[in-house]
Length: 184
Image 1 (tube, rainbow, N blue to C red):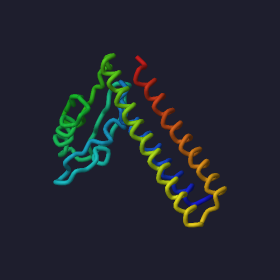
Image 2: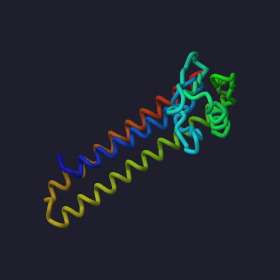
Image 3: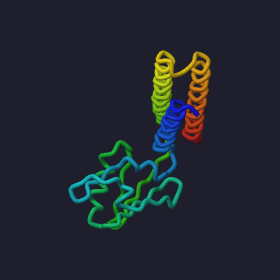
Image 4: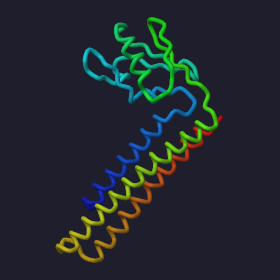
């Protein structure tokens, strides 16, 4: 495989993985530890991800249970959750924090679908930019005489196929997330 193709394929696959990660962090009305991945807790003067300072459990479909390994940071975890953009109110009982996930309203579901569409479109743009970079590199190699006309044309078709495949993966992730969000 041509090194340009291998490079662009790997970078496009990373964009799809970013999409998968972003989609998992969008709240769909049910509890998931992925909702809390971006929450940073002030842990003795440094910001640490919540999942590195506490155990996160899902005992019920609409409940997250957060149990810090160090009980002294329970207040810091609660503050971090209050400051986050999740819109959830933590319930601190002195040893664990409970996060009740309320059912989504129709309006909120539509907003979340728009957020998912925006994230998917951002990744589609990133994939198309990678395609453009690969096409420019192929054009430069053709101009420098490193590639023949036929070989450059064949590789351009391959880059387009990679682009189409990765964009289809992003679209599939978006469709699955949209179904998940709209499911009552």
